Image (tube, rainbow, N blue to C red; front, side, top):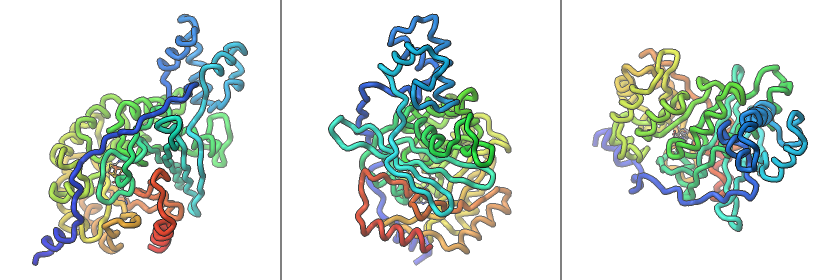
Length: 407
Ligand code: SAH
Ligand code: SF4
């Protein structure tokens, strides 16, 4: 039996569906939060409470500054807004962010927040998502979620096993950045330990497939990258997709942030199994969309993520095929050691194999950092973000902890 044949045999069966429907709804609170609104959204909200048209632009500008530069949590802080106006705003709106249900700090400084969102209905359990801050020597990266659960079901991803799916609102997405700034003391008018900003980069690589929640993700990222507000430049914001081809061009035109593609396999046969969405949008179509992504250059490359799965996609032939496939695309390749979870049908590649793979693509001219798993002791690493919505049993937790700490 050939090695390839053996690989075929050892692959787990692919699920028979490609997408789940985001069935769960969003129960809007009585007094909506202004967090996440664009300037136009703020003007419309002011209009809705009777602020005269001639004042709306100026008032929206003031609110924008208090919300996104100063991180105000209470209308009372807005000293340049008339007292009556502040009271009127507080009667109709809040500045609520998602509620922090838990905060964990890893031995390596990684922080994870479990956030509680509005439930599907007033009477049901709240939804929960996770958001992770990863400090490094030269940057601080915040990893944010775009959905509760995920529309898709990649074979190696823990989030994909979650049945419940709900799209986050733009406010809930921006809210994650605001909470991280609140907790890290990282607003523009506050001193940070380094003197610089703590959050310098954002990656949309938490729970969910961002391009299946396009409008909310777009609106949120435009707020986050506005240079008169939170001000994290689009070059420092990366959206990761498993390959929702029609929305890649839209992301380029309407959002303009950096793109990461979860490739993980070099043949359609294997990618169909690992990333079932490939059956809808195969590799050739995905790479064509990447080639057309606007603004690419050697300084603005697409990141291709490649999870290292033992004996599945980690051979030297795979590395060679990867280099051939990406020819002509300004690309970086990000090798991610597989993070196991209880019941996961894969193992992480041996270190020697990861190094051999990395060396080949490096010699072919690609920067090929191997992403160091961070925050493993708090289950914050890639693919381990699975909210409490589906609680793990105590045994599963123990298993996860053991795996995270031993390999
Ligand atoms: N849904 C989007 C973004 C979130 S996933 C996407 O798939 O691109 C962020 C990255 O982590 C993706 O590349 C994903 O494939 C990878 N990932 C998921 N589960 C993983 C695991 N168990 N170990 C390592 N990487 C994983
Ligand atoms: Fe969803 Fe990304 Fe996980 Fe796939 S890897 S199931 S797209 S979160």
